[in-house]
Image (cartoon, helix red, strand yellow):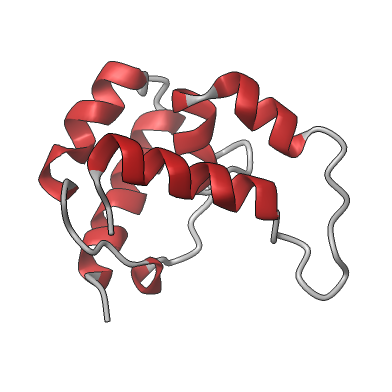
Amino acid sequence: MGWNAGYTIMEQQVISLYDMGLLNKDVLNALMQPFCDTDIDHGGSYGLKSKDGKSADNIICFIMEPEKYREATEGFVPDLEDPEWNEKLYNLCYEITRREWKFW
């Protein structure tokens, strides 16, 4: 079992700063420092969305890898049973968070 509270905190911070127009790669990297090398866990998600409908994971991908984010979302056709699940976006977020901040 991972660190749910860590995800809760991170989710709120990422979405708040993004909605205020303050989030860029440098700010995101600074924001993530307390979470580096931890077992931060999506179990702490409140399912928050930005003003433009992005989740914290989507925002991370959008900020860190905008071209790959576009490729993962372009032409995405949601599944009726799980309309928010995008495997390409999930894999991109997994790759970024492991590479940049060593989330387990």
